[in-house]
Image 1 (tube, rainbow, N blue to C red):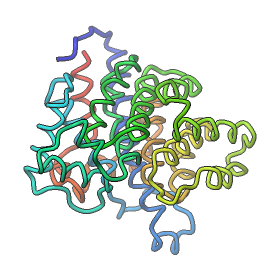
Image 2: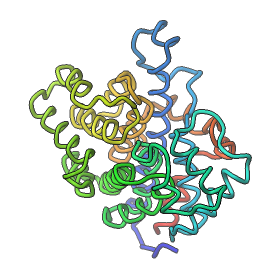
Image 3: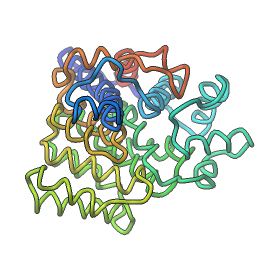
Image 4: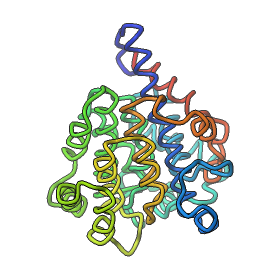
Length: 328
């Protein structure tokens, strides 16, 4: 069990608001970015500027629900054994993964079915350096508020069931950034916290340096957009080394403004649902629920269950409260 901390009422209220903003921001971003990739919606609206009524969660939100539920079930004492037990209960025990999942997630489930355990279930896996661990890791940052080292250590345990190398480092970066964002830190501090856990001599590390140079060279996001595509493009759009740096760049260039982040991230193309989910999680953790339009929050609070069936019975607000209850 996580060691309890006594907090003044106002601090606890603020903590809950930022935790809720983080999880709702992730869910809104996931659904917003998925609309942005829809040919039908782009034909009708040009660019996506609203979270329309048919918006639905993808694996990004639903695996974040799994991460949150795993932390709740183990009382915050995350281990490889707790991860395996959770995936067995909520994935294998409920018929497996369904639609919209990423390749390394399906691969990890297959590895677990054949008895391969983490970290080998992530190492001996297809496309294990994509952004599928980063997309789901925000609940770890919420639980580890103010402690990015602990967030990164816990993120490694959480991510290695399905990922390796850049896939893990991207998750550690996002978890650390959320943990710092929850404290009311500045955007520069939030980004710096994430970069701390990315090896400089890695594909992800080199691309993080590249996007920071782009941001410095083109401080107007409209001017930077083409370079963020050209300099980071990879044949598979969901690589952590592409999507994670692009998310940080959009955060930086929009000043972590939630609505601007949704519009630029959701209409960015490539892995827009994950890019937008990461932006939403971090900016939501920084600013709390007030930054999120209420109708968007209401629409995204309950996942659709398109990938993980159990997620359809969960509430992002409810999970945020349970995570905060673990803290103190």
